[in-house]
Length: 189
Image: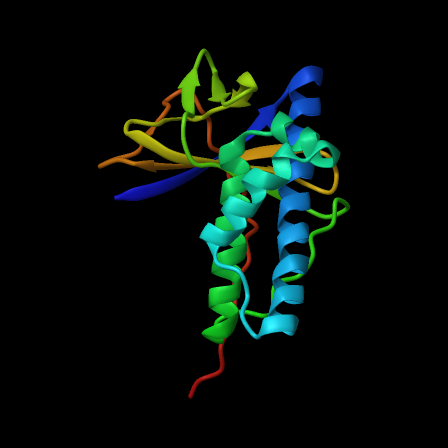
């Protein structure tokens, strides 16, 4: 069984810079290949597949104008291409609207599909090391992926997808609630 657990993360200054670079590179790759696929579709009647985009991305990263893409984790860039391909498939199956260009002024996210773990009250992410996190539940199981998001207000969150049989809640966390004393009256039918 798969479960998702969302936590607030607190990157230090260097990690924040690296995360912002990763977010920017993934956004660039999405926008670049959305534009390239649209142009190819208009010219030939066929768009680009994930394999074609991934092969082209490898060549693009070798171009001196785009060397900065190598600073990002390769897996996050490939994931951006997979997400773009899924967006196109969902559009053509009439399950979603046509993919839009991404903006840095709205919520942004990247997915780390591998090499993530929980260590020392933090979340270990590729090329970032251990990022401080507020983890209120113990995750027992294999982490499948981590999606890091940045809100428009500059806060960072991580959604951890893991495979487990059960979810254990730390006993130290306190839960509080408020009884507002509301009642509702319904007319008789």
